[in-house]
Image 1: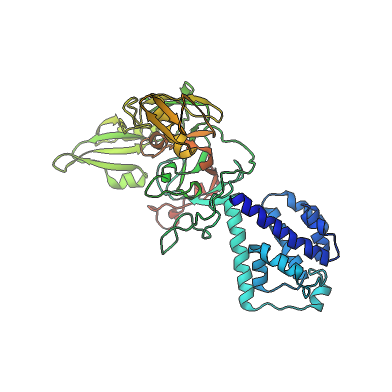
Image 2: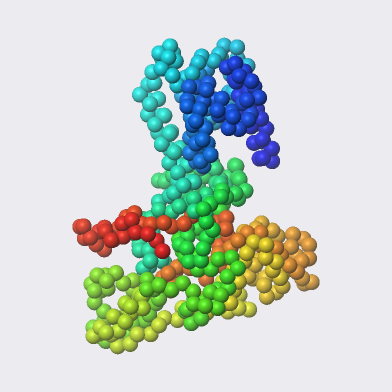
Length: 473
């Protein structure tokens, strides 16, 4: 329905532009031919005609088009703020109105000195500020939505690859920027209004998932920002692009077989992503002296004290790298170190599988076009994918499984999916908990940290200087 309404309003807007072109001495049909229309606009407003080459560059072409367009409006004497705003927001109303108004005439090339001298127009201070604020807001929103966006790491799920307090840039271009699902939103707010709370977006207009072409596909082990899939559920019920942003490593891409054996990641039967920065959890037993908290903070070890039934600290749970735990074993107060067995229930959290964070799989990451079997064994694996992510109705009945009301024993996957995990293996809410991440949830690729703030540092050491403009691997 929205496509029909949008198409109708576009036709009305082009009709108004047709009328204005005729008033300027051009042929009306020139207003409806993409690129040639902008070439003619450049002539009418006194801009260099070669500027139309900028129309072939994504995002930049938006600024160029509206530059031509608003200059054209000025050429018809429409220079007040409300007239410019109306030309952008409701062109289907004002363009036909101006086109049929006999008092509205083409005055000449608005971007020339001769025009400015002949038709002087001085903006008020309020208008100057309004124009500057609106331009900055629009430009920043476009850059943030389609080019690059800044993020801050709030939790330790990617330690030590990414640290709490890292500020990083995420590219929307690498995998291709998404067209917003909910374009009506408050600028710079993700899903919640600042200060007042409440939704920062409206679902009055919803656009189906579309992604512009990117430079590359997601490769195994890329560090990816994506929308948290579980916020499709109550109490949030948020649209895809307004779900919370998470950052993890895509340890499995579409078609990969992922598995955990004794806390070790396996992908396609071989050891998965491994790095000296990957952390695991260990239970560290000590004598009555315990561990010095100042040393733990100084080394930036993430830890938890483990008391006995009397409240006496008898052990510590440390999240550290393999190299760091070897150092801990040599401390004088340490009596024993035991790898932590993370037996938290893992996806799909079904009794048939009984998987946990340290032992699950093998599990194949779905790929677009895959035909999967539907039966009692596969139902818990694909139920959420088929219903929540791909919008179908799936039911188990006494005589079989029904897909959109039709008994079915197979389903064809509509999107690519990914298996996301944190480098802090035992302190990360990731695909082991919520399962597959659909391609329409992918926000962008993490490129580099531009600042890193250490809350436990002092004075100049508050900034981690060695992490500034550091690439993310």
